Image (cartoon, rainbow, N blue to C red):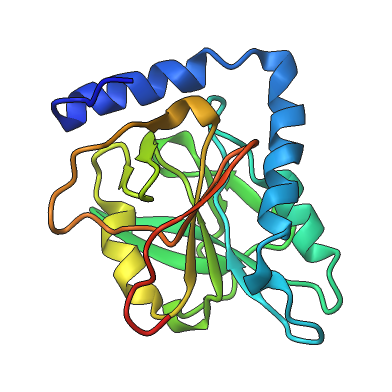
Length: 200
């Protein structure tokens, strides 16, 4: 696959890859990706309650719901939070253990209610990160709003896990210095890791 020259081209390819996944394949691929995420060694912490920041998938995105359900079935169950848009490039994090606790918010994306319990960024152990395009070094391009690029540096030592269909993984994606790099990229068939960042 040839390299993409700019972010706009990467977004076009990533969006096309998401749209090309057949509806009847989506649930199966989401289960395969969930199996890979649950196999990460960082999740093997017997007796430790994990705090996981997830996302509510759009119609085109790889749905982390099967992974979230499995995390909630751990002993002890994981605490699951979702982001809520509260301003330009600004997210707050709120506990929402059930899908019915979410309702359409900014951009039509389901999010927790404003009065849902807050979660501080430094409480998050693992964050499942959506995106439009990725590469094998765990670089990520989102929709261009900058929400996750601002949020991820605030999450301290949290494991940053990109979540995507295989077709969204390009040979390289162009990134700027402010773009947050992930630790791991999980697809339905692959688990890719970036070089260890300081402090990990």
